[in-house]
Amino acid sequence: MVVWVSTVAFEGVEARAVDVQVQVAPGMPGFAIVGLPDKAVSEAKERVRSALIASGLSLPPRRITINLAPADLPKEGSHFDLPIALGLMAAIGAVPEGSLDGCTVLGELALDGTIASVAGCLPAAVAAHARGHMLICPEACGAEAAWASADLPIVAPRSLIQIANHLKGVQVLARPRPGLPEADGPVGDLAEVRGQETAKRALEIAAAGGHNLLLSGPPGAGKSMLASRLPGILPPLEPRELLEVAMIRSIAGELAGGRLSDRRPFRAPHHSASMAALVGGGARPRPGEIALAHNGVLFLDELPEFSAQALDALRQPLESGEAVIARANHRLTYPARFQLVAAMNPCRCGGGDGGHACRRGPRCAADYQARVSGPLLDRIDLRLDVPSVTATDLMAPPPLEGSAAVAARVLDARRRQHARHAALGLKGSTLNAHLPVTAVGAVAEPDVAGRALLVDAANGLRLSARAYHRVLKTARTIADLDGADSVGRIHVAEALAYRAAPDRRAEAA
Image 1: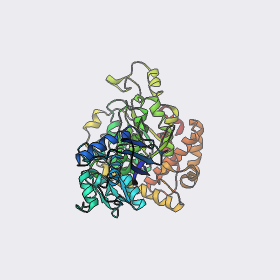
Image 2: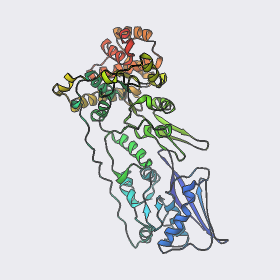
Image 3: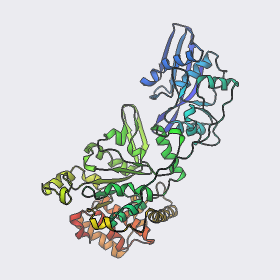
Image 4: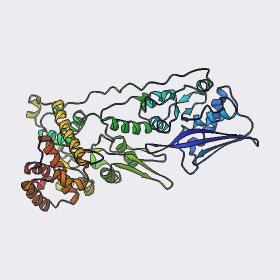
């Protein structure tokens, strides 16, 4: 007899159905797992054997074969332990025959028979609901799985004995409740930033349109402080965005207690991060920082200190909104529609005044800035010099306008973008930064004076086609913040001022 138990295998954030086929047949005693298992899955037989012994059961001296179908799909992770164990228990009569029909099962077993938490429980719950199945998962993952749907039947046992008693009708386990919303920590206010009014304006434009931003200035100018204030002016996640972010965090094992938050992600990896850490991958592929920043912000401080290979790997995701990890036998795709905010010093010495003044001349700055490739810079809409803060700025009274007022303008601008996208029937992201090229003319076409300025500036600054369209998108966002229906010369001029290199801004005026 062959017992079938349903589980899942993860491909990106998608949970693909996998059948665990268990056969206990006469023959030489043995325990084999087939179906492209990785090391963690192959070691499941020892965990399963010990967990069954700890639960008062023993495997018969027969030939045990476990097939994970489809056999050509790689199987990775420890969540196959529980479906294998329950399949064996059904095969030897420890649980009723047919009690596992219509169930999707996942969980890792400890040697004492308890069931440990696993990553990816939320995508598995969504897949189980789509298939009309009940979900059996670890108790520690029950609160996370409960967010998938209120109509999804969920059983979250603590041990093999509990789930066996539940399947036999001896003990009834209650459906877990969704985890409480995550308590968001305090976010810095823009009112705490002294001076840097131009940088605050650029931050507001970046937040309103989802534009990429580069802040360049000497140490201590407030670049990191400005970037850390960005979450405070971004609108909360929409329900669809919240589910996408939660599923990625679940795959990465960062959704402890099933606690969700409507605050947009803000990821700030160290500059020593590898390409696999940023984009994703590794021996066992996992989502990288750009996927974890989906629908949020990726902040790269000390941008030139990152490896050139890691930075250039960001170029394609910035355009497509996806992180693609290709292997010889499979291909994974994670959503990665993030907003890039970067900060850097003008040169290795700092490039400021006083103790940070550069003593090596222009070549120091040229060599340092050359670490960031031109194609990556071409994808950054707003590039801004952040000057040193003077003592007068520090002693001045705090500004009257804080993050709440800026956040209200940002939300209003995003609502205008959403309404415009809906009227035009555009799909996907509604932010100006993500406008398809085919829609730029209809959405961001400037008036006659603005078009003339843009043509002159494009020729003088030798803007690429990508840069030309990004200037238009930025100008459209500036017009949205002003409440204007059309893009005027003043909007184009401000967008060009942020786009042009410091020594060439005069040509754009």
